[in-house]
Image (tube, rainbow, N blue to C red; front, side, top):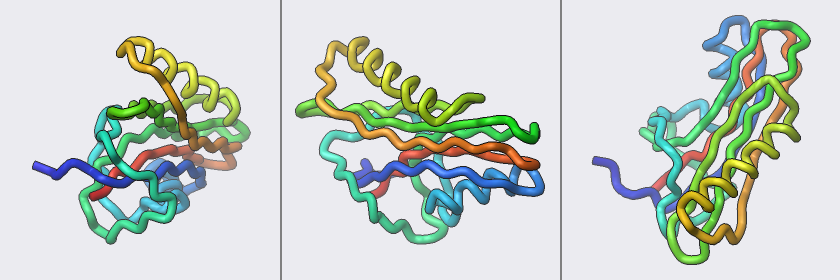
Length: 152
């Protein structure tokens, strides 16, 4: 059982590779999360978790992470990924992820809409949000990735 995370940051990055896996790995590296082991989690930010944009996580750590990504092999195709966190006044937050064949601006708009819906569905007041997004024009094999790593 992992302890409840106390810190987080948002990241979004894009990269190329000579294979789908290396494109994904290069995007992880560009996003500062390439040397950790991601444990994919769903969409709740623990109450009281602190935003730390300079957070440094030790290599090899097992890290709960909400993320979305897209890989494309179509040269010239525009891909994007985004994550967002919606914050309540006094309780947990909600994380949303998106990746698709669109612009960064479109991905950001999708995240904002999903956060508003998530808070409405929970009957909670949305008081703030943070969004990180990236877009990438594919050259050979490209990856766009956005993530929220959660740390202790």
